[in-house]
Length: 266
Image 1 (cartoon, rainbow, N blue to C red):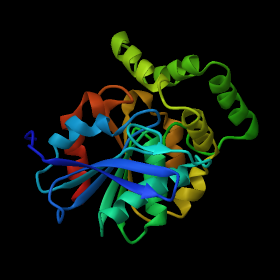
Image 2 (cartoon, rainbow, N blue to C red):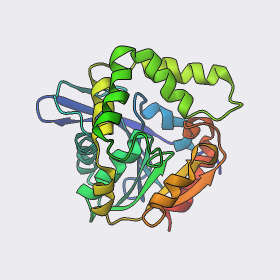
Image 3 (tube, one colour):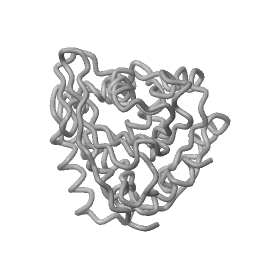
Image 4 (cartoon, helix red, strand yellow):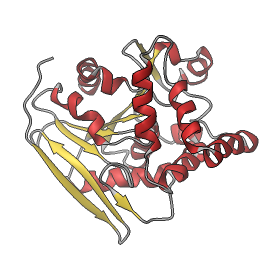
């Protein structure tokens, strides 16, 4: 797919008195809308290269969730649902009537919630290596949730390193792993820890039951368990890919853009 020159506007929308959401908007205002939601401890810049490979007639909105990237918030609620309201605020500010919402990692959970909140405006949800990690996405039992959160509370950098390692296939360049670990360890606090708490508490099964849109999951083959596929194949369309690590939208932007373009036009 051709690298498309885009004029990008960087905008913001206020949510009440405690939150300012920054986002990037490019492409024609009347074009088919694609909303891009980054993962935990990441930011909208992860989609810069990908966006340049999307069709020129596509309206692209890349959102910084609260306390990620350039967005700021002093709110006390850090649930997946509240992050979804950040995205909804952008859709409303841009007067988007219909959109495909694609989210990477935690952003995939946020995309599902946006679909649940806006059933008439979200035509499809796309998860970029999200929703299939059974140790994070379905609501965890109390003991498991305590174990996950204890690791982040006691040694945050080590817990981030473990999270990155879990999304890294064998044979990956160690330097790449170090880059992601360093970046994600710098997530703003207390939002970083609170976001993990919100993700572990999120009831994905309930959200999927209440979200009617088709949901496509582009999952790294080497990181996808058969157990996850068996559990969710009646609700999620799994497409296994070999494009790098958990952060493949950054590593393989052109191929990811092609996947998104094909899915958005169904």
